[in-house]
Amino acid sequence: MAKNIDHLKELLGVVSDLGSANALLGWDQQTYMPPGGAGARAMQLATLSRLAHDKFISEELGETLELAKAEAAGMDPDSDEFCLVRKTDRDYQKEVKVPSEWVGEFSRVTALAHQDWEKARSESNFFLFEPRLEKIVDLRRQYANFFPPYDHVYDPLLDDFEPGMKAADVKSVFATLRPRLIALVQAIAERGKPVDDAPLHQSFDEKKQWDFGIDVAKAFGYDFNRGRQDKAVHPFTTGFGTGDIRITTRFDPEFLNTALFGTMHEAGHAMYEQGVDPKLDRTPLGTGTSLGVHESQSRMWENLVGRSKGFWSAYFPRLQEYFPDQLGETDLNAFYRMINKVERSLIRVEADEATYDLHIMLRFELEVSLMDGSLAVKDLPEAWDKKFEEFLGITPPNDAEGVLQDVHWSNGYIGYFPTYALGNLVAAQLWNKINVDIPDIDTKIAKAEFGDLLAWLQENIHRHGSKYEPLDLLKRATGQSLDAEPYLQYLEHKFGEIYEL
Ligand code: ZN
Image (cartoon, rainbow, N blue to C red):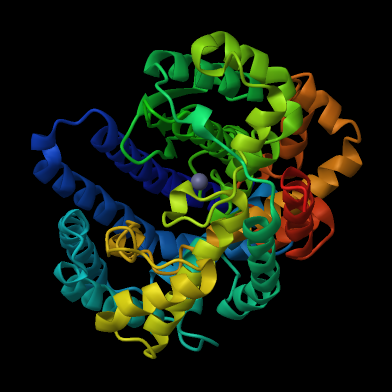
C-alpha cells in the first residue's frame, strides 16, 4: 500500500545494518581486540562509515524519500510511517549538506588527535594536543557553516546530539541552575555535617563486585537474553538492534562505587534501547532519541533509584553478605550518606550529583567561547583553570587533571557536554510525573520491585525510539517544557537532609 515508504525502509535497513556492523567492530575494539589490531580496525571502521554515509545520501534514497514524503503527507502524525519519513528527512537534509571531503578530513584529524590527546594527558602537557585541537575547532566551525542561517554558531553542533535544542536554551537553563548549585555546594562545605566515606575505600574482590552488579542490573530489568556485560577501560553501552544491547563496566579493586554505579548507569542506557519497539528496528527510529534523554535514563537508575535510601534498605543487607569484612559494621544510614558524599573535586566522571552540573557548565561556556572565537585554543588551559576556580573553588594542579581530563574534544565532540546536564533535568521532571502516576513508587523500590517503574518508562519513553524529538517527548510524557526547578528541588531536598543544612 505504502510502496515508497516500504522501499525507503529497505534502503534504510541496509544503512542500519552497516551501522550495526560498525558498532560491533567498535565494541570488539574496546573489549577484546588485541592492541595489534588497531591499525586494521581503524580502516575497517572508516570503510563501513563511509559506505553507510554514501548509501544514506545516495540518489536512490533521496528520490525514494521525496516519493515517501508525498505518500506520508495524509498519514497520522503519530504513526510509525509518518515519524520515520519526518526523521529520515531531517537526517538526510543535514547529512547531504556535508561534503565527503570534510567527512574524510574530520575522521582523519580526530583519529590523530585521539593519539595526541592520550600522549598529552599522560605527560600532562596541553601543548602536545594544542595543534590538533586548533584544527578540530576549525573543522567544527566549518561544519556549523554548512547549515546557514543559525542563531549561534554552536547551534548546529548541539543539534547533532540534542535535536531541536539551541545554545540559547541551554544558556537560559544553566543561568537558573548555576547560582543555586553554587549556593548548595557552598552551604554543604561550610555548614554540612561531615561525611566519612572511608569504608568505601577498601579492598573489594572483583568477582564479587561483578556478581553484585549483575544481580542489581537483572533486578532493575536489564534483559540478559538480549544483552551482556563485559569489561572496558571507558564504560559504554552499544547495540545492534533491540535484541542485542550490550553494556561494559570497569573495576577499581580499592573503591566500591566505580563498578557498582557504573553498571547501574549503563544498565539504564541499555534498558532504554531494549525497550524500543522492535518494529522500529533497522530504521533511524530504532534507537534512543537523543543523548540527553539517554542520560536521563542512565542517571535515573544510577541516582534517583541507585543512590536512594529506599533502594539500599532492600539491597544493603545483600551487599553486606557479599562484603561482610568491609561493610559488616556499617549501618544503612551511614552507607547512604557515604555514597552521596558531596565534594568539590577535579574529575567530572567522579563527581557527585550536587557538583556534577558545575563541571558541565564550565565546559559549555568554554566551548561556546572557542566556537565564537572569543577564546583562542592556546589560551584554553588558563581559561579552564580560571573557570574551575570560579565554579568549584579549586584550581587544578595540572593539565591532566584539568583541561585534558575528558576524551570528547579529541573525538571532535564539541556540543556534546550539555546533554549530560540536560539528562539530569529530564530525569527529575520524569521522576515527578512517575510519583504522580505510581504514588507508592518509593515503597516499591524499598521492596526491590522495579517492574512498574520500568513499565512506565517503556510506555512513555522507551518504546517510541526516535519517533519524537527530545523536547516533544518530554512534553508528551510530563506535559511540561524543559525546566531546571524539579532537579534543583530534588538536590536541595536530598542534600539538605543528608548534610542537615
Ligand atoms: Zn551515560
